[in-house]
Length: 434
Image (cartoon, rainbow, N blue to C red):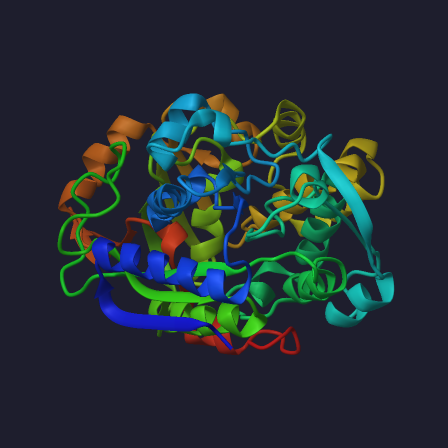
């Protein structure tokens, strides 16, 4: 059970800071009375809208006078933060105390999630083991407190195996489920390999404030939402067990899945320019809306920060080489191409980001050319023309009528999930606790 929880229509920053102090008091009584070395494991900058940066800074400031505190942003295989991004995300936390996760050369092998367990949890969609490689600093040094592991501190072998398993299960069978097959495998691994770590979780739930939903600076750095429709914390869940996650996930599902009676013909959304620099992360717009889009519909993604496809040069090259060409073609190529087998997580990403030729994906990027976008099998739109056509500062979240065109506008697709009732409730069952 959670140590404690709090839910409200809006939890203020001062109140969240008070709950952080309470979490540390609980940890001192339950885990270690006088911690000397503490490891904080927050999300990376692509989750900056969650407030996880200033939450980390608050933990750091409350601990720094009595403990040696370090931070590892759980990058997974994302690009490491620059000094400027660390300052933007974590404020006053010293740069030298923030360590980049090296997913290729900085991990320690712990063991495997056996292939039989993977096969059982995925319903036979994947039948390979998950080799558990985790950040060496986490696993080989002594810590009195730490939090967060999969997949943000995983090694290449684990990231590849897990991403490909998720792709084989089908992304639309995973979205909105509390316990997906891959998460069940990670839960098994955490119990098997990480039981000795003195950890706890500080989890937050966010939702948009009603009733007015309007973006004032959606494409500007730091511009996530206008006053009336801003993302606010609505839940804090603190504890050290699976039920803590499930309690937070239940509230998030209640508040952040927008249920639609009919599929949408046209969706326009914004991926903020200070967070989303690659389609690897900006394609959250695809993942979170695909279950709401009509056949032959269109998703327009306004992405002023977009400058690449992958988070690393080899992944970027692979995406450029093959493009988002749909599951049948990707799986056919995967059996033949050594680079796709070596970078299996990128192969899985090609599946996740494809519309499967069911709807059109149009990107309006800040730094990529038409040739770049069309090379990976998306449609291209000029950013400035798109912003003139869809003046996001005047749009409300939801339906808008613009010059005779009806669109559905989503200012922060990474903060929710949109689906028709038919798609959400009529999909394949048997994957976890949906």
